[in-house]
Image 1 (cartoon, rainbow over the protein chains, first blue to last red):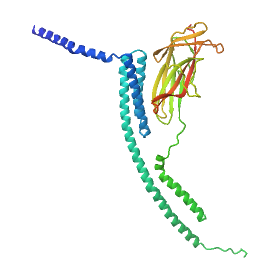
Image 2 (cartoon, one colour; image 1 turned 180 degrees about the vertical axis):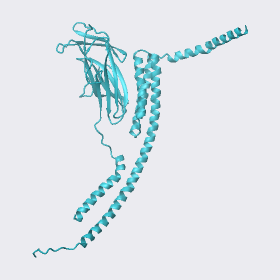
Image 3 (tube, one colour; image 1 turned 90 degrees about the vertical axis):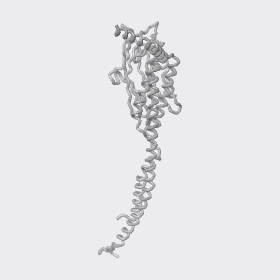
Image 4 (cartoon, rainbow over the protein chains, first blue to last red; image 1 turned 180 degrees about the horizontal axis):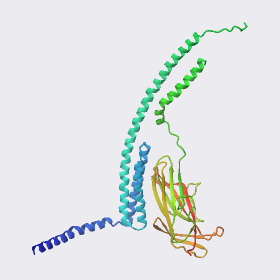
Length: 176
Length: 200
């Protein structure tokens, strides 16, 4: 009797919980998912801008000398979601547009952040390489020219000495 | 034995070449690189992944497939958009000379970003809803591309010379221009001609 009564109390508590928390939650979820045509169009535009902006960041990173193959792969995931969102929009499935366009924008934003990091790293690396190259050339070229100058001087002396050591040969059958 | 003047010239040339070789790492970073010709490839292949067996005589509600491909030779990554359009024989194609796209509406689009030297291929399945043949013409109402149906209102008249009702599905290549922050026509397009035939 007690067991049965306590079970029914639990059941009532469960129903009360669902009424107080479950129902408002489901309503909120509906509000979130209920995306109308205008909002869906706006979400696609936002995703489109995010993808374009991410591509620009990737291009900048590539221009700075970074390896962007992994970023391009990730960007294509965002691009794929954007295309999917456009298809859902065309089919009038605006609820799915929100989800897919949101995912596209999210991935694109991550790509953009990573591209900016890669660009900074690539620029600092390029700067380092440039400095090393310029310093190397600035020291190496004068040193080389200096060495070549002394080599030439030595060679010239050696050549002259060799020429002076040569004895004139007189042929016996030459007529004066 | 070489003269001293000749040896001096040889020595000078060797010094000059050596100097440039030592300075080359810095020169490479300063001097602008002379790139190769920059272009993009756009191609369409038949259902067997070969340049043959393209769909031609089409019937309503039958599925046809082709493969579309893009190859990037632009020297850097490019963000491409591939736009599918349909036209009859009298409607305009893109203007290659002026570099203008066709004014016809885009039915289907696909996007991809490609690294320099990257290749991308995608299957394109399409089918037509029922055709109608009012009088001496053929009208299309629906085209399904990769599972998405597009309502179209296209008509073509009988071509007595080639004996058929012809439509062309063509694909324009657009690229994203970071300076204008917009897509622009890349002056590349391919297409396949289709002869609409009655279902027996």
